[in-house]
Image (cartoon, rainbow, N blue to C red; front, side):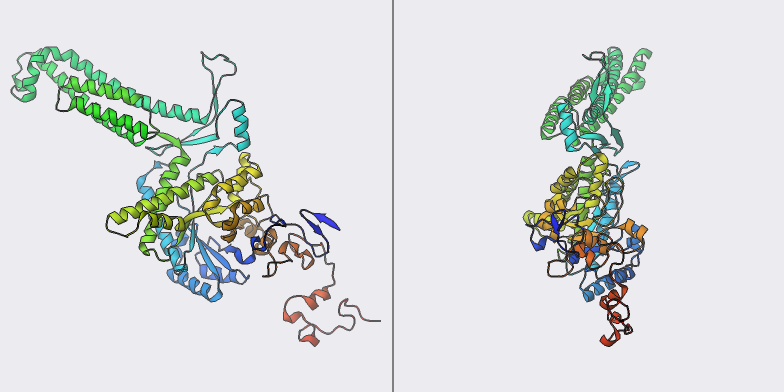
Amino acid sequence: MGKEGDYKISEIYQGGYSSLSPPADWTSNNYIRAGDLSMTTDPRTANILQEVSSKLSGGLKNIEITAIQPEILDAIPDKQLKEVRRLSKLTGIDVSMHGPLIEASGVTQQGFSESEREIAERKIAHALIRSRDLNPDGNIPVTFHSSAGIPGSQFLPPSEKEKSKKEGIDTIYRKMIAVNRETGKMIPLEPDVQYHPESENLKTGEILTPEDKLRLANSSEWDNSTSQLIFNKERADEILEKNRPLIQQLVEDLDSGKLKERGIVSPEQANAWRHYKNANAYLKDVHKQINSLFSKAYEFSTDDSQKQILEGFSENFKKQIEGNNDPFIQSQAMNELLHGLKQTVPKIYVPVEEFAVEKSGKTYGSAAFEAYKKFKGEHVPMMVIENPPAGGGLSTGEDIKNIVVASRDSFIVNAMKSKKEGGLEMSEDVARKQAEKLIGATWDVGHINMLRGQGYSSEEIVKETEKVAPYVKHVHLSDNFGMEHTELPMGMGNVPLKEMMEKLGKKGFEAKKVIEAAHWWQHMKNSPFQESLEGVGSPVYQMDMAPYWNQAGGLYQGYMSGLDGAWLPQTNYETFGTGFSRLPKELGGNVQESKGNRMSGRPME
């Protein structure tokens, strides 16, 4: 008796073991059934009715409409959406939607733009609202990528983080992409070695981590801004000090209007007054710039304690200048404020993940609430946010968890705002429950596997699944080898699907699982459904019992398992194969009666 993997090969009908061959203690309900798998439509065509009809011929129970290109979504007629809905009711299938790839953060090649973020919000809400035509009686899941253009930071695998800590280097990044929160401009920050004249060991130098460089970027940016204003103010002070003695006795009358400028007799005093006025105007301009700088410090403060410090600066400044137009008094107050601000470094540069979560969460939460408001809470499409291929922005398990939480928070904020403005009546507790129901994650097992290209092990990739597991409502299945964004049927690469499904648990098995195998379609030119059934160990029959598709090599010759070559006579397949027409004539079929043994095809002697 042969043995392979976790089970014994006890008969010739036992096929090869699957990447999702369940252990003995799993219940039958934990198998991925054929009825839980979904196929996608061709993303290149808007003729979804033809696509759905074609996919139905393969015996599918679920189909995902793929409209990842915005122009394809808007090229799908409303009538086709409604016709697909009628077809789904007629055939008993479930339909989901993959929405267009839209950069929800508002970051473009030119930097961040709030107007671009608002446009993205409207497009996402539009896709959600249109998707309801496919299923107006449920909560159809509509997938959107967490990001669709911004680059992502490269993180050290956990094993390398521990190694770095032992070497005295506390970092989580191999490469950080930092964003200026004010402009949206991005800069790459990689580890570097710097040599300082005061270093104890000049030959080895000092290692600067991406985190170190981020702190330097913030302190340098802030120091340059405050120092420039201090310089400008001091220049104005010099001019005032130089010219005030000549006109000191005239300033009060000139300011009050009692004395006109043309009434100044002395040419030296007239010239000093012009310089004095220019310096005063220059000082007022510095005041405006200080206000702008203070606003930036408050908006981008690191925490509440820093805001409290700034509030103290504000109170002191107001007391000093209130009701006093003396430029010297105002200059002194500005000087104190500037030197205080100089020591209070805000977070102007942040990792791209932090920035994108904040902006994209606002976009997704607002779009989800817009759909909720449109349909008055009845059968609202469910927004599920997907991890893009690892390496892009917001692509880790931690990222997806954070953006789902931020989107739910944004939904609640919008709900409370609507209530305050006389819109939908909803308590904060109800809003939170609706946000948790309508906003979740789509987990793409192939996309996260691409962390292998950054040095992650299989175990470390599985841990990313564990982080996002509580938020998962939808699953995309594609296999690859972790280096390129290829999409193969499960079992053909090295995606640790079995371990991922264990981490997803009951919620993962209850979620619809969409087969994404674009490269199989491209190169093999046929449906990947059978190969996917083999790869996930689906049972052949509905009773949740053997044989399974990955054990069916003796029943027919599949791609994933079975014996090579025709080991039974062709007549056997003609007699016992599928379809009524393959039966012998005497049993009602079309096959001519054999002159010999029907099983062998040879005449009897």
